Amino acid sequence: MSRSILGIDRVRCRGLSAILVAAGLVLAACGGSPTVTGAGGQGGSASDDKLEEVYSQLDGVTDLQSRRDKLIDLAKKEGGSVTWYTAFNADDVAQLVKDFKSKTGITVKVYRAGSATVRQRTEQEASGGGIRADLISATGSDPGIIAKEGHYAKLKSPITDQLIPEAVFPEWFGDQVYPFAVAWNKDAYSQGPKDYRDLLTNFTDGMAIEQTDADWLYGMVAYLRKEEGMSEDEALKLVGDAIKKSTPFDGHTSMTELIAAGQFKISPDNYHYRVLKTIKGGGKLTWSPDVGPIISEFGGTGIAKGAAHPAAALLLAEYIMVDNQKTQWVKSQRTATLKGSKIGVNATEGAEQFFIDYEGLIADITRYQKLFSDMIAATGKKARS
Image (cartoon, rainbow, N blue to C red; front, side):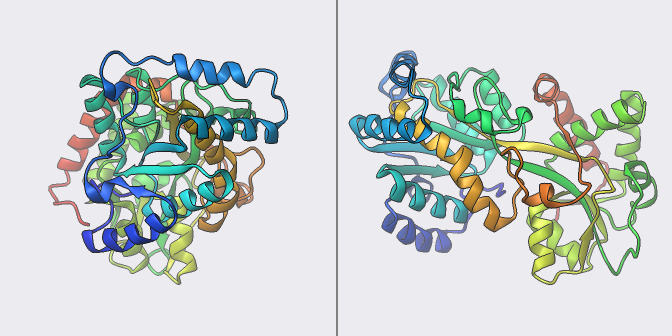
C-alpha cells in the first residue's frame, strides 16, 4: 500500500491514465481532485434517503443475478457512473474498473491515494458541505475511523453473508485481509523464531519494522495479553524493547524486498501477499505460519454518507465483495474475506489468524499511534524507503 498521495510517480501516472481511460475510467488522482460532485458536495447536510430508496426497491429480489440486474438498471438511471475513493493499488484499480465496466456498463471515476489521504479527504469534504465520493475504500484503522465519524451509510446487502463474520460491520465490509506475516532471510536464519515471544526476544538483530504500523502494535499487544497472559505494560515493554533495536521503514514493499536481498534479516509486520510475491520472484525469503496466529486486519469498503449514486455504489461494493476477490485476489495471492477461500494465508495448511478488534482499536487508536511513534523514535534511525 502506497503512503504517498498518488502512490505512483508522475511518469507512471501518465502512462497508467491512458490505459485506464481506455477502460472507461477517470483517474482523478492523476489530475488533482475529482470533478464529479456527490449529493453532499451540492451543499447542505448529507441524507441517505436515496440509498434507502434503493434498498426498498431491492426488497423481495432474492435471486442474486436478478438483484445485480436491478442494480444495473437503477445505476444507469442515476447517470451510469460511480465515484470511488480508494487506497487499492493502482494496478488493481485498473483491472477492477475494466472488468466492472464490461460486466455492468457503469463507469468508475476514481480518486486513488494512500489510505490516510483517502480518509483525510473524506473528512475534509464532509466538514465542507458533503462527501463527493459514492464509495470509499481504505485500509487498517481508517475504515473504522470513517465509520465512527459517521461518513459511511448503513450497509444492507445479503452478499455479506458470503464473507467471514469478522469482515462484516454495520457500515462497511472487509474487502481483503492484510495478514502481518513474520518473514526472514533464509541465509540469515536457517531456523526462524518458534513464537512471538521468541521473535521479540531473540531475533532483534537485523530486524526491520514499518513505521506506520500502530495497528500491528495494537494487535500484537492484544494477542500477548489474551494468549500469553501479559499485562498491557508487560506486552508494550516486550514489543518496545524489540522495536528500539530495529530499523524503521517507510513502506512494506521495500522492507520485504531488502530482507529478501539480505540487507536486513527479519521483520514481524510484512504484508503476507508481498512475502509470497517476493518468494515467487526468487527472493531469499521465507516465513512460517507457526509464528502465529497471524495478526490480521482488513482493507475496508463502505458507501459514502449522502452518496449521489447509491445504486451504482452498492453495485460496485457487491462486485468488490465477490467478483474481485474471486479473480484479482487469486492472481495476486491476496487473502480474501470470502468464506472458504483458499488463497493467500488461507491456502497455507495450519495457518491461523488473530483478527484485530476494531471496536477496541478505534477507541484507543490515538494512544497507540503515539506509543508506536515513540517506539520508532527510540530507534534513533531515519526511516528507510
